[in-house]
Each structure stands twice: as structure tokens, then as C-alpha cells.
Length: 79
Image 1 (cartoon, rainbow, N blue to C red):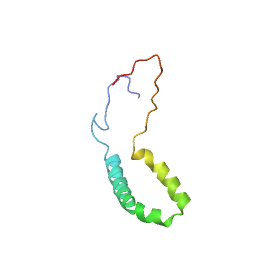
Image 2: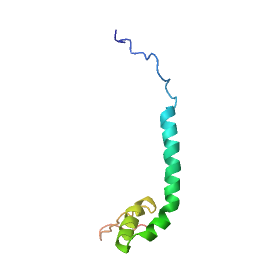
Image 3: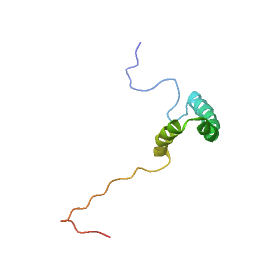
Image 4: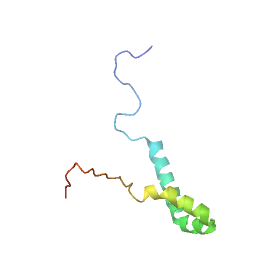
């Protein structure tokens, strides 16, 4: 028989964290921290071209993206 009342019965209560998700995030966090520590050693093993490609791919995670700014002659400059 289907629940047509619109009320939730059983399962987790609203706002209760998912235990599996919490454990998975903790495990992935540990793995990532270990890998981050290995980045300098792994970069040394790469050829120069591959190292530069990897660094370019990692740059957006370290540096903010720069927005282009344009100024037309009709607009007053704001300082």
C-alpha cells in the first residue's frame, strides 16, 4: 500500500548525517593528504613537458582566475 499522506515514515530524520558518506569522505581525505605530500617527488619523475602540463592544470586550484578589465574613452575613470 502506497503512502499518500505526504508524511515520511521510517529512514533517517531530516538533518541526520549519512554515516557511509561521512566515512567515505574521511577515507578519501586521508588518501588525498598522502598523495598531496607525494606531489613533489612525483613531479621530479616526470619529463619537463609533462610536469608543465600538470602544473598548468593545477594552477586554477591555487591561484584565482583573473578577470579582464576594459576601459572605453567615453567612460570616466574611477579610482
